[in-house]
Amino acid sequence: MMMAFLQRIVNGGGRIDREYALGKGALDLLVTWKTQRVVFELKLWRRANTEAKGIAQLAAYLDTLGLDEGWVVIFRNDPALDWDARIFTRTETVGARRIHIVGC
Image (tube, rainbow, N blue to C red; front, side, top):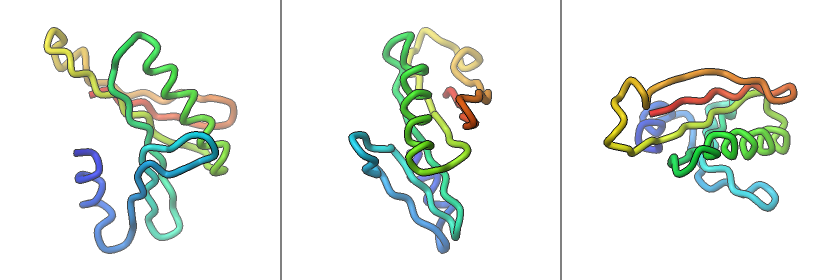
């Protein structure tokens, strides 16, 4: 679903690479629009450390690509949680990198 949403945004002028190989890891999505590159790490919430792992992964990918910011999107498929508990957004700084975290 995330790729379908992003495809509508880049349609006609950009592209989406999925599982973009970076060294020993694979970035989930690399969106290229003209000269801009935006990276996304997608996570399905499994444990309390899911978010921290996603942030660390993305920070390493940003360093490899030489980018200043990226996005971690965390999907919580827990019917016990209401939408107010699932949906959030915030930005953290890791080193010199800005990481936007979105929960849904």
